[in-house]
Image (spheres, rainbow, N blue to C red):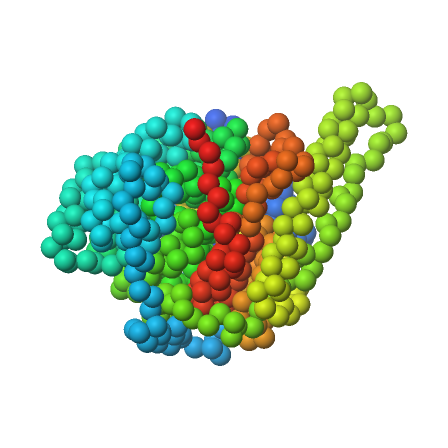
Length: 627
């Protein structure tokens, strides 16, 4: 008997087989057997009862009786397949599925377009300029407000700032590896135009004339959009991403397309590894690796990154930046690489909270193309009375870390096995020591908030299997890069380990459609329970790299990641090798972070609260010494 996918799916249905995974698994097994036998692909692959048993194990169904297996095989007569027909469409990454995720529970309804809107009089006045610096590079670490004040006072020009930042990108890229493409011609033309407009009194707003960098998953016409991945180094997309268009309209000056881990994973890209300015022996973390590293190193005024599951939070923590992961559906992703249509979010990485707020104000809102974007409002109001907010904290997230269970010696273990066990145990003990050490910074944040007059209410993250929902991400990612896997071009990606995309994409192809839907149903419960939590409090304080990171990325809630001090000389020494799996390995003299969360589309209130914390602590003013 021969096989084709549509026929096999129909046969499975007739046999009462509910799992949609099994047909695909079985077809793959049969095709592999055909290839191994050297029969070529001139006819569909044959299926045996033994293959059905193997496929059933992978699909988590069965076992099947001999009669069921015979019925399934006897029904495989159709020579055409639905998989093949869909694949002939050659769907590009930019085509989204027919379903759209919205993070609000059904009972809540769409956000009011006036949400977060404040009277115009409440908005802050522009900062006054200080005296012009003797050397323009003294402004390298200036905030957007400070740079804007200098530009409005015409103490400096956008052209001079642009040239200064481009020079720093070129100077420090050999050390930090954070640049993919410098958009020099475009930037110089934009800067000249900004200077002419500012001189003529046509001021577009706080970003006018400010140089910025884009994570290279944002399309920019006339320049490669590489997605950080081998095989895409010369990819040209003939459009500007919506975010790029909006920052152009705000008068901001795009000076570089910055690195990201290949296809938005980690800090390894096709040109190497992006480095942490505080400790260049380590990676910057990712996947918004270049935006965080370049911002922390004073090589751009601000940057735009993205997060699907930690890609703003993690590099902002490692590099000591302020990152704002907006509510899902606040910023249109048109023209951005799709990894997970229901989880991808674009947001700013900057030096302080007001910079994040001003950038978000320029890029949020519907564009008529990304149907996930809601008509909610955002207006930055640093004068908002943050003392009126009800503040909670995830109590268990601040508990003392429990020691990790070490590997015990097994009877008769060899010398090699003993060495591996002892090495693994030493690594776990070191990890626990770092967790214990870093906890004091989390606790200090709570004490600082209390000293500011904040009354903290203990709350807990809803008890749901959040990690079990994350295959949603990899399933969508595998679909987004389906052709990459099927063509074998995934071998061009720099990283090929068990946790890297090539292997994860292959594994995701065995994720049943039924289980994908079940995980989304569980996610719906998560959204409801997280939304109920934010009816009790307006803001939640939490350690950054905690279970909440997975939960809030799934539920679509906004997060503000803030620098929270530097580790002291007594900090545990970092491991010799940065595997990329941990964010707390920096060692002495490296940054730590704290995260604030808020309800859906409450990003402006979140920013106001975070700004108050930064004003009380000043941690955002710390910068790495690059020499």
